Length: 191
Image (cartoon, rainbow, N blue to C red; front, side, top):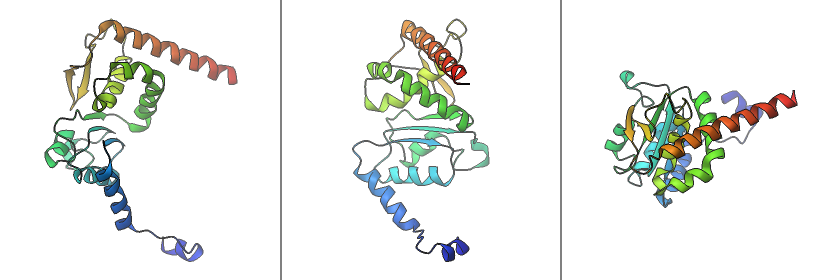
């Protein structure tokens, strides 16, 4: 940064200004949700910003960090709830997976299934949870997956109180397989 500032004057790094902007955005938000891909300093500052508004309404953390090393990235969502960074009535989700692999899959499912997912919503806070639900259900075949209607929260399987329709889960899985096959066909046609 030091040498760069001589070649390119005008670069200003002002972390206090950044923190004020981030905290102000969180405080003024009607609802606040966080999707944190990875962790570290970013997770720390985003969660702290939501502390200023008595917690985020929903949260999804995607990283490979475990809590045994005491890192901020490895902290479970229930710790953030205890600090007031996530609301007590929220349904936080932590996905223990390599973020660069999982996030594109979740994003793809969001694009494909968002019209279907919105039909299943009962409240705004459940949006992220239903995306995780749809994505995890498509990982295995319905015949091998007796957990239809469940979701992962704090590394425990929990039954969704909002949606547990077996037929819809099977249709979501079949639609996912069809959409992936179509995408593969289009990709093969380009090469």
